[in-house]
Image (tube, rainbow, N blue to C red):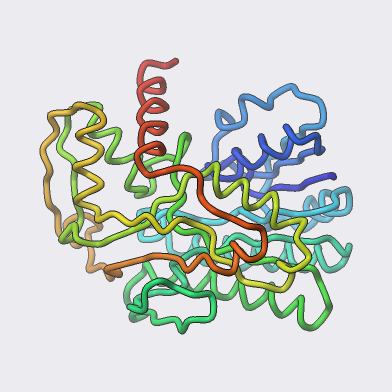
Length: 324
């Protein structure tokens, strides 16, 4: 296939680009490098059947040409990371909503199957665990900036499903649950690389809030494997699908595990959300996916444990810190 990946220089996108290329597909990555990095694509640089285009997905002229030349689209371009969302809410809303609007319109124009990346953030403060794709959404007040991300991705989902219902466009929506692994940056608030970097430097590991919040961290390799199978699964078309793992850990337990695996002497330091983000912040206590739909569709079961994933991140960060 000729595969187009928006946001392909990002963390998940770059791993997906490598996997698609390794399977023999022609891969075109488009990324404006606002949060992605060419270093993530170093392994593909100069390869045949690979092309990188530095551009925003909001540039309809360029995207028209790229969509015309592809067979399928993975739309991963988005503003991500809690810190980025808090700091740049206008950028978040414009990038997520208008970017998806452009991509879905062009996918429909040229009849290209499109997989749209969404997020577990859309479940908001729902307390029914695990989260099933059809569960209600409970969001906080619009005065809390962090919910702008969830709302923007919900609009993306509504739009993707609307194109499927109204025009028959082959759309698939995937809700990612805390994907982690090598290449993820802690710059925009991602907790695992942030903890690992602090531990390796022997600096205090800052835990925001109580530390009793629980999350399920899924290895990027498991996510990429699922994406590769879902794009070819007829039953996935027109569906919203959770992608993640059900191995749960509290943020405090995560900090302890990172300290243990790095052999660090880092102390734990607690910050209120207001101290961390400079403003009041709304959060959810637990986040866990119901994976019955994706298991039924493609037989999906995560292969990596949290400890295996953390060891991969630690090794990656060690090499990065010494420039290797």
